[in-house]
Every structure is written in C-alpha cells, then in structure tokens.
Length: 557
Image (cartoon, rainbow, N blue to C red; front, side, top):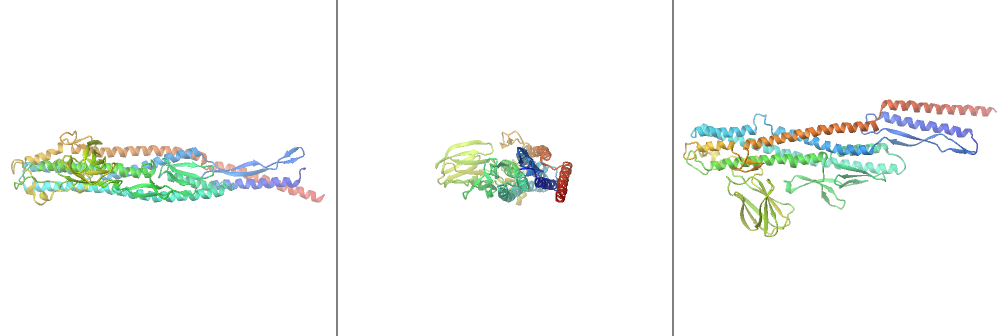
C-alpha cells in the first residue's frame, strides 16, 4: 500500500481531536484550581499505530489514550494518619479549655476560696463559740462550700453528657460518610470496568476518606478490582466495595449508661470497637468523656467525701451550745452499688456506711471467684484488699464500709462499690445543724470552750491524701494541696494537648504543601500547556487546509 491523501487527512483529524481533548483537560484543571481535593489531570499522548508502506512503516499521527490524575498514594496514606491525630487533639484541646473554664480558680467564687472561708468561719467561731452571728457565719460558709461542690460536680457531669451526645452525633455523621464512600465505590467500579478513568469520582472519594480520617483512625486498602476497602486501624471493616458496616452507639451499663461504639459484623450482630478506635475526633470525645472528665469527677468526689468525713469525725466529738453531742455536720455518705452488666450469676451485694467518720472514700470492686468466695479490690489504689472471703454474711471491707453478700454468683462476676460517687453533687449539711445552730459542736469539754471548732479549723492543714489516695493520719498533702494538684494536672493536660495540636497542624501544613506540589493546579503551568496545545491544534487545522488545497489541485488535473 502506498501513501495516499486520505491517510494524511486522517492524521490531521487525529491531531485536531487529540489537542482539543488536551485543551479541554487544561480547561478542567483551570476551572477547579480552587476545588478542595481536586487532583490535576493530564492527557497521556501516544503515537498512533503506524501503517505499512512497502518495506517501511509510516506514522499516522497521535492519539490520547487516557486522562490520568497526578496522585501520590503513599503521601495520601500519610495524610490520613496525621489527619486522624489532628482530629483527636483538636477535640482534646477544645474540651480541655471548657474544663478549665468550669474549674476556674480566677473567678469570684472558687473552691479554694470556699474551703478557706469555711475553715476560717470555724476559726472565728472558736474565738466566740456562743456568738449567734459566728454560728450563722459557719452555716453560711458551709452552705457556700456545698453549693460550689454541687455546681462543680453538676457541671462536670453535664460535660460528660455533652461529650456523650457528641459521640452519638459522630456516629450518625460517620455512617453517612461511609454510605457515600460505598456509593462512589460502586460508581467508580462501573466506569473503570469500561476502561474509563473516573478521576473526578476518585477525587471525591479521597476527599471524603480524608474527612472521615479526621473522625476515625481509618486504613485504606485499594484493591486491584478498583474497590476501596476501609477498616479501623485494628482491622474491623467499615466499607468493602459497595458494602457498608455501619457504626452504632449503645449504652454501657457499666459506664453509667454512657455510649459505647459498636460496628456491624455482617452477620446480623455487632462488635464493640470502643477500645479499638485509636484516633480521630471520636477518640478525642471518648477520652475526654471517660478519662479526663471522669478523672476530674472522681477526684472532686473523693475531695468532697474526704472533707465531709473528716469534718464529721471531729464534729461528732464535740458539744453543741445546747449540750448535745454526737451530731453529724454533713449528711452521711451513702454507698452506691453497681452490678456488672455481664454478670451471669445471681449473686447479690448490699452496702451501708456504718461509720461516717472513718469510712474509706476509695472505690472498690467485688470480684467473685466462685459460687462461695470473692475478693475485694481497691480501684483507686489498684491494690487487693482481701481474698477468699466467704459469700453469705456481712463483712467490713474499708473502715466502716460494710457489705452483705448472698445469692449464687459465678466466677468472674463483679460488683463496684463506692461511698464517694456523686459526693460533690450531693454534698449537703445535716438537717440537725441546718435547723438549729446550737447543734454546731464548737466546744470539746463544755459548751463555751471553742476547742472543737478550732480542731475543725485545723483540718485545713491536716495531711490526709497520699499519692491521690485518701489516707487520713498517714497522708502527705492537705485538701488544698489535693485540689491544687487536680487543677494543675488539668492545666498540664490542656497545655500538652495544645502543644501537640500545634505540632500536628505544622505536620499537616507540610503534607498538604507536598500534595499541592504533586496534585495541585498551577495556573502558570496550565497557561503554558494551553498555549502549547492551542498551537498544536492550529497546526493540525493548517494541515487540513493544505490537504484541501491538494484536493483542489487534483480536481483541476
């Protein structure tokens, strides 16, 4: 076969079509220069299949084989990991600031001031134990102290509830995003199985996965069949192609009904993945709810319970203005008993505060080792209190915390017991002294010596805490020291989260800059390409004009 004019015309036509396609791609890039998640696209040009002319091959022009996007999968996986950590510490930083606002010692009425005024009121009463105004001042200062404890306890509990609501809200948002990823997977599979690159859909999916990584620590697996599989970092699947494994939030009865995160197991059931979640905003919400805020509540409760116990212990020894004795100043701490939700036996436990002046305010767990025996474990100090105790009967496990066991428990069943739980929210003066100031036991040996009021005032400087545990008589820090340590620990956590957040923002800035250098649209570069393809298009058009003139010549022959 020899060369002919029609093959030259076809070569020019291919040049027009190919360069027009390239110009369209450049225009698409320019139009999306500000589109979040967009990856710059390029036309892949190849030499068209040549045709044989005699013993040689003659080129037949150019063709566009594909339109690809500039994308670095390894860099994208790095961005996902760092986004997860950024989301975590963004939430931590936000809620640490809210906790600091609640426990704000610079405000007019702070717990430190309230405790100081309380002890100062007893010191004033010691100087004039029969003065009615001094007694009323004690009640007023005590009422203020109880109110501050109540408000702090309620505010911290409300913070936990707000965080719990946020967890449920995150589940809804995440499920919606997982559904969108699955839909995009399906669309991409349909397009790319027809040998078409779904670049824009892939960009949409990648942006969605990046946003998802800010909420959860997801791992991305891009399979050979164009499917995308998303899992948690622990391996639990979230999306497999067009199949979604939805999250759900369910009440954890062992955590006062606050929600755990569960994921569909694909067989009609769910798996608890609360502990498996290691990053993202979800981890931040969970940690702030169940570690940081709960830790503050526990410390505040033990501070309140310890203060009530110590004041009661001294007050019981004194004599009121009316000669009465043995009266409590604060209401008795009431034990709470929480049966493990996973218990399979019928064991029962009841508890009473048999000694309001000596009872230990730590938290305890009864661990049944069989149908007839149990161990006692101190959750506050992480120490074993007693082992091999017999089921059936009453036993004093902690300086007046008396428990009665019964029923038929099963090995592994647990029961949590505490006299300090909710102590801050429920702190209240006893009705005895509240209704009659003469019942305030200011005296020790008589109604007018004021020694007992002085003893109560001196509690302020008593060493009652040791390494966070309430150990009156063997402690190393006072009530003020304990509270100041609690506040400083909160501040340290806040500063740490703020520092890590700043570092993560810097890391993300660098990673995003690297992505822009690879996938971002440069208007200068696109303008150069536009001119290049425009000139090539014009040359191909000129070639057609030349062929037309050749036809005219042939027609005149």
